[in-house]
Length: 239
Length: 239
DNA sequence: CGCCAGATTGAGGAATATCAAACAGAGTGG
DNA sequence: CCACTCTGTTTGATATTCCTCAATCTGGCG
Image (cartoon, rainbow over all chains, first blue to last red; front, side):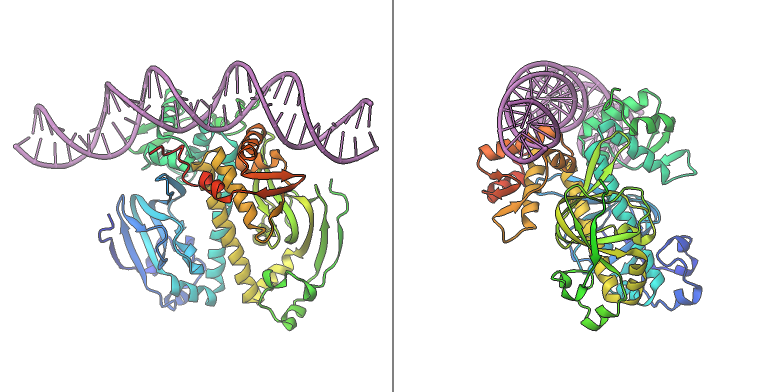
């Protein structure tokens, strides 16, 4: 499970994600003066970066790959609260000194930066740019979160799944064939459905040639049709 | 609808909510030096404080009363994204220069403070305490929002409603009889259910003497039982 | 009184879950 | 290479939850 995760000291100056990170906008000098230990983490599928309710020690930037944030209920049910892609942040709830609200589990081979929260805290006091970047991410997370409330509250399974697939695709703009490391159970836990129901709808989408799967690669064949299903589902409004 | 809302210049020094507001922790001197126009707003039921997609000009602090944040879909469906009580903030999405993500509608007679976002922006740059307070609220909103995702994704109607009633009650700790200005349709729009279904479950709760209604006052008679229904609903896990 | 918005109730049907079984593919060990 | 196992998927049958539509009921209020 939580076997030793490969890690080494990271070189931020060379980082390809640098201008999309929370350190974007800092010049080389500032970046060097951070004095921050940034660990370079290699995550394999199934690795647990942190667990729900643990005191938060680190935050992470996902440079590459995919991670799910899972909340486990007493009933044993798991809910995927958020899905993270390259450029996303995780574990930052700890900045207010709280415990982790979810477990972070690696879905596909990932590269992450691990930041010490206490150091990051100090840093953000000192550098308005960093602070602003974090605030912006926070704001984004809230917006996404609220969009999901709307999805879950207002739309039906087909529409939710269609929306979800399109959103997933938007994270890989230039790719026709998308990495798609989710199981049906994952999708179900994200959309608030049963595994079987997800399976059925996916099968249906495939039959209608809206999407196509091979291995863990997904291809969206008819985004327009999917968007239509995702949108004002006329099943709801027959007129 | 958007008829003139009563407003006057507010006196922050006298405010009873002061130490729960984003200006908490500032001394009188600092508070005076804010140089901020704070309008004192009187909201009546049905008043629209702002509309979705409008450019955001003001943010508000709800001193007293209740407000709903509504997102309207193209399908005509309304979803209540958040319910606000005394002490809550609204309209702050505008701090990042965005448009309003929801419409804010007054549910019960309310008193609010209206803050100019641009001024607030400058202020939060200058005063770390204010900035930290806003950040904290943001964090809280995200947490609440994620809790709601879990509710909507994992729980069934009965459990959702039970949770909701208990949460509502928690906002009025010392009251046995709670102000409850929501219609069944409001509750439905909050929980992602139909009006009729909400009505049925409420009736059921009343029959079981878990709750009691008179006018727009609500009383929770058996919080334990409600908590039980809200929790690990044994209908899910028969064992 | 008559009117109206909201609440309730019932009946039927659609959406979704649950349970069970079969199926497919990727190791893994002989 | 083949059985074997494991995990994830698919499919079917059935049960449950929830929605929709229509009717009635209620309480305020002109």
